[in-house]
Length: 402
Image (cartoon, rainbow, N blue to C red; front, top):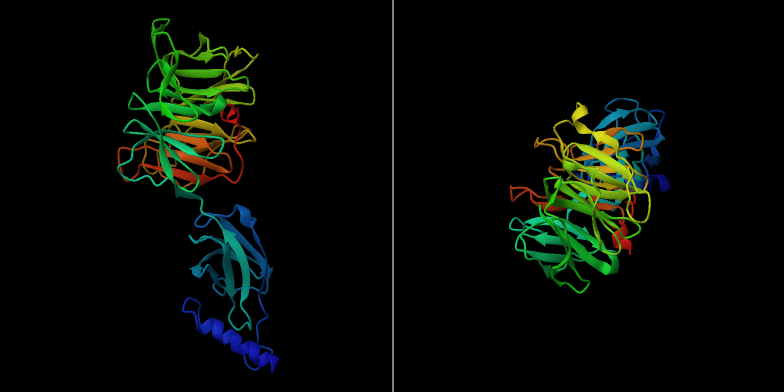
C-alpha cells in the first residue's frame, strides 16, 4: 500500500507541472527500474551563489549517464548541463532568486525526483530609486549605511537602507567630484576641478568652506579631484596639474610636491599607503608619520601595458579588506566590463564578467559586503546607482569611522 501511495505522489508531481517532462515510470517495479537519483550537495556554498551567473556543481548518485538523460530544473526553470555524469552535473544558475530555490533532477524510469533546496542571490541591483531625470554627480556613505548623493540640482540627497530619502544639504556649485565622510560625521566635498574643500555638518545644511589651496604649484594650476583620510585624520588630496596635498589634523594645507603636472582621478588610503590613480596608471606612497609625510612613489599598475585593458580609463578605486583593488573604469567600449580587480599577487582580471554595464565613475564600498557604483552617463536610461554584492568586506574608510 505504501508503494502505491508513493507512485501516486510521483505521478502527481510530474504531471501537475507543465515545466517537468513526461518520463517513463515503471509499475510494478522490476529489473528495468532505474535507481532513485539523489542530490548530496551543491557547490559553491549557497551564501556565495548568484542567479544568472554562478556555475553550480551538483553532486549526487544515480544520475543518468546519458548526455541528454537528465532533466534539470532550478527554481522551475529548465537548464542545460555543461557536463554530466552519474554522480556530477555542472550547470549555470538561471536568473532566479530567493532563499529557498528548489533544484530538481528528473531521470527517466526512476521512481522519484531528486530534490535539493538552495539559495541564489542577486549579483547586482539598482539602488536608491533614482530615475532618468536624476543626475547623481558623486556618492558617499556614512557609518550608519545611509547613502549620500550629490544631485544635478545642487542638493545632497540622503537615502536610508529602506530606500527612503530626504534632502540633507545644498551646495553653491553644480558638481562635486568626490565626497567622503570625515570626523564627527561631517561630509567633506570637493568641487570638480577646483581648489576649495567644503564641508556639511552632521545636521545638514549648506556647504561651508573648510580649506583653500593655492592657485598654482610650479606654474601648474591646482584643480582638485579626489581625496581620502588616513588613520590620523590627515586628508590627502590630488587632481590635475597642481599635484598632491595633505591637510593635517591642525587644518594646515601643505603641498607634497609630487604628481605635479600629472592627472589624478582617485585617491584612496589603504594599509599605510596612499594610492593615487591616474587615467591609466596607479601609484602608491607609503605614509611615514602622523604628519602625512610620504615616501617616494611605487608603481602599482599601468593599464597601457596590458593588452586586454589598455582601452580602459580609471575613474575610481577602492579596496577589499584583504587588499584586492577594485578599479572602476570607463572602458571606452560599450560592451566591455567596467569593473577590474587586481589581486594581491598583481594579477588583473575583470570582475563579474558580462554582468555590469559601463561606466563605473565612482566605486564606493559600503559598511557591509556591497559596493555602490555611480554609473553616470549621458544616456539617461543608463544613469543609475548600482549595488553589487562582493561577498566580503571592504577596507576601512578612516574618515567614516571617526
